[in-house]
Image (cartoon, rainbow, N blue to C red; front, side, top):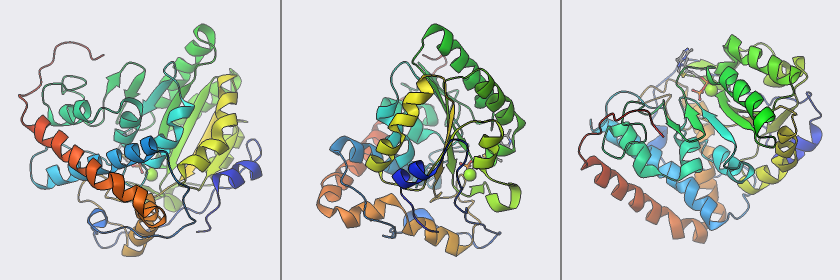
Length: 343
Ligand SMILES: Cc1ncc(C[n+]2csc(CCOP(=O)(O)OP(=O)(O)O)c2C)c(N)n1
Ligand SMILES: [Mg+2]
């Protein structure tokens, strides 16, 4: 896949007309263990990050790896979907969103939550059902509510809810927006189009963030999507931006003006061409080895370690230790109790 920068893509893309980079197409193949191996160094040089951005990226990475480890050891039950490989999306968006904005997340939402609240203790307690859980331990990995943050594991459900909240914000709190994260596979849900229709018609401050990782569970996007995300946004007259870069600084610069326009009532679809580094949930990666290898080679983690070794190593081990300590401390807590609605 040709790597283009976010800046280039944003410049090249006119409202409602952008090209979607070819998503990797897959067929069922051999199970792989992508997350245990070192990631590679393909892709253009990444710019140097602010310390807080690097820390946040690493926090999300090591949190997700710890979850898979806990499941593998039998210390966690149920299911979870990690955002391994996609951590840079919420980290890049973080300073573009303010406290008055609403964030709607999906089944792959740990990174969205951690970028918003930097609260690995509360999130892990929620997932493990321990005291201090954000929602008393009844929401688990996928169903979390805190302040202006709401996640759901029901694909597409958040789109009409986010459109409704955007309508409220437009009337009651002009300047605020609703940001909703969805995957490429979720464009198979009709609710997405009902929400886009109203967002365009009523000029809602709705920011739709598409994390196009080329696959929905085990179905390659190329096998289930006719046309493109860009074409579908264009059908409603909704502007579309394509982001192929994984460079946090570059992405922010490219999207800043677009997000400002959303606040004025110009809805926007931002499509990140990204890679799912790990399994869909746990141990269920049936993608062919070459697809997983491509994801690993383009992974920001290995690339940043290669491009900025001193900076990377100053934080990587320390953050891994922090997350290990979080897990040990949270696991030792008593079970959580439901004490009424969450925050
Ligand atoms: C309405 C609904 N149908 C099916 C599922 C089961 N399911 C969970 S995630 C997923 C695939 C989602 O694919 P995509 O939107 O591309 O997000 P990704 O998992 O790749 O991040 C499916 C089918 C669901 N959660 N909700
Ligand atoms: Mg997907």
